[in-house]
Image (cartoon, rainbow, N blue to C red; front, side, top):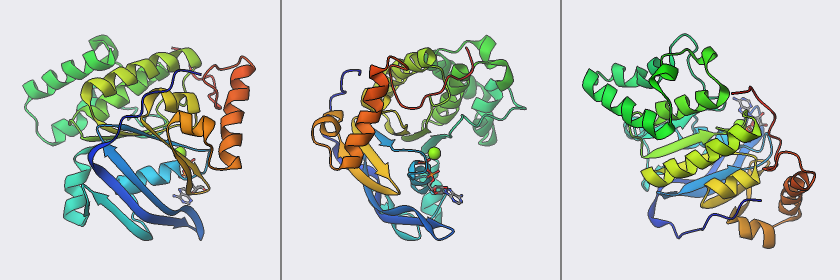
Length: 273
Ligand code: ADP
Ligand code: MG
């Protein structure tokens, strides 16, 4: 188990807040009265088994879904349609599996929105150079199509795309989920460095407790659309809120002890890099 990240106090008011938000699909609750503050300039990690509502929570925060009940507040203001558009422009999203357009090169994927916004060419290339250095991708890789680069490189491209417009709040949905353990560990280290350097507010989804502890300041565990515990890794290990939390932690630790994927979870071996 990697060392626990320190849990500094969140600074100032939250950048985004869910207030008793519920969302149902076909009569079944995907999220059930979830209240959550996303602190500014910190990384919040949503944890939980498959189907627990992690992606739904992200999509609600992004305004891609509207809550059936409850409120989503951006800097303490509830969003109307115009406010939502303005707030969305300040959010970056790395969807599960990266979501790159296969018919565009990596570079074209990264610059698509900037071109749509008619950024001058010099501004586009300056920003690309800055981000390529940040995520450690060469021009040669950026000229390739998604099918011609590795899983890890695709996630780096997806991260560049999400950072292109300098979003204040970044959402990453299982960004490392399909990568093999070595590439995954390397990208975890890079993400820690990138988040620290940029000081962004980040919400990251994973089902891997080790990854959550390594990347997150605040850990939030979901079960069946409800938050069962929030806190630090230490809280999860030593002050579990329920038997489910204990079982969740133990499942990941027993995986460690078996000497498999050292970071536990159900990371599957993905495409080789
Ligand atoms: P997670 O990301 O934690 O795996 P999701 O948020 O994707 O979970 O899903 C939570 C629950 O909501 C699941 O039961 C899922 O089947 C359901 N769900 C999510 N999106 C939809 C949708 N668009 N239509 C119907 N059901 C959905
Ligand atoms: Mg999901």
